[in-house]
Length: 281
Picture 1 (spheres, rainbow, N blue to C red):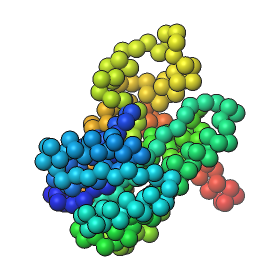
Picture 2 (tube, rainbow, N blue to C red):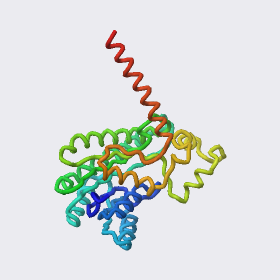
Picture 3 (spheres, helix red, strand yellow):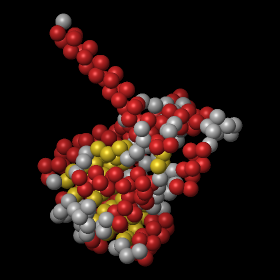
Picture 4 (cartoon, rainbow, N blue to C red):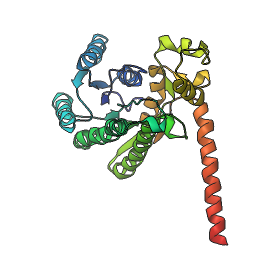
């Protein structure tokens, strides 16, 4: 990973609450010898993580920013420029969403999901792109999509729609910015939990009373096997490898998503074959 050493990595959602992929990315970049910028809405959590990294010998700073506020992101980009003068890797990682039936999802929930994950991703890239263009060396934009964007699923309408849009944004960026030497990697993680909860989830009977039926259905559909769930730091490892290799897509873990994605592709192949037969008729 020498291509990353000495560069500057910026991670939004980097304080890593919940599943922790953001924090996992931050820690893996530090291990690769990069200077790290931890960006999070929770400024105190970001500073705590940056302080831990500095204690361990990594050059790191924290920035408090709201990805739904373009001016907040521009101020953060200015701070990174003034501190390090470069941005080699930009990870637009912020995301999240609720679970409910389609008819129960409010318009406000749809707007919130799209504002956070779609508009927030666009605003993050636009804020840092001038600095990335002025940076030399290996440069990569990293967008966190989801395994949920690779196959159909239930009860996560706003989240799935937003992550599908993030995937499309990443593909557009790779095609438009690639000729400038700025590539894009799109990340498709499956389920993630902190390490202390992994074993509990893997050994819990989903049929027991007290588990929300919507959550149970999503879990049975997306993560029925142990390998479908990982800790944030473990999921970050293949992302780092994909960044160094210049790969457009990376699936971090999970076997169920592969089966579901291939089933979707088989249906699409059948639709294309049907269209070809119509053309020949």
